[in-house]
Image (cartoon, rainbow, N blue to C red; front, top):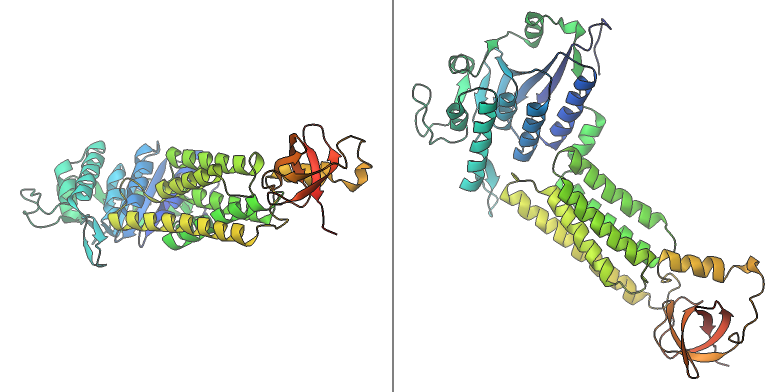
Length: 436
């Protein structure tokens, strides 16, 4: 919802609100809000914070957005900016506290193998400390204070003792350069900066941000992966591009779109996806899809890698990374197993006509009832046997000649008696000779 009473002043200041747990939808929200403020040529962006923290990878993505924007930013610590919220506050150019506001306590936590909530390993803690330090340095603040928010072993004389994780009050923050001023309320802050609250743009969370939050959850990611892969597998077994292919493509697109918005899907993920889709396209359009071939398997492996790299960022905790590996592996294996079952259950089905180009040629040109009589040829009427399995393309043996053939039935096993019904020059159209 956009609140505006004076059209000439409505774009001067934008207010973005981060409340509750920080998730991947928060990144989508901040990205769109900052982009809107940039497009409106806003003079100031205020990020109002009342959050206990949230996902590390989401906080780091939000940090990058705030550091890269050209618009002046102010973090308004309304009640608390803890953990991931503290990093977002540090990424803003100014920090303003409301009465009773607190900032800090940013130690990274994760779940262990028993499901217990424990501190993240030193490798993760080191990365978090470095990010906090770098963010403080970028905004000309004491980096040691920022590190003390992450590591209880860091002592800041006069502020915190060793063994005590740093959480600062408004007064402490002002003393150590982590608060530029205080304001009784957001309205008071805006008024002090010359922006009446009625002239501000209050940018609220959109439906798409909530959708992104849901679509980047592990459960829905697993559903999108399985449905997307199965859609492509079924499409390769059915001639023409139909519902299965559309659903599969939409699921893949939805997954990568949502993860790209939150900064998890990078160019390497897109490269894996494109490579996998190209391999699948070759399986559909060039090679026969009656038997699931090497190109299709490679394609799904690459798509699986694209899924995994899109679910795991550089600061994703170990538990989430292992969960992503499990989801992707289970999805790929399940899809391949289903494909194998479909192939074994439909050995002679007319659905197994091969690739789209192949089936189009058979169903459209070769067997078009309106095309009239076939051209007279010495080959028409000749009898032979299938020298290879035909599905539907293969090799037929006619006396001493071995030629490429395509069968009307869609699939015929090796050794089946054949009758040539049409001569296309480079290959012969055949059908099975039925026993009397």
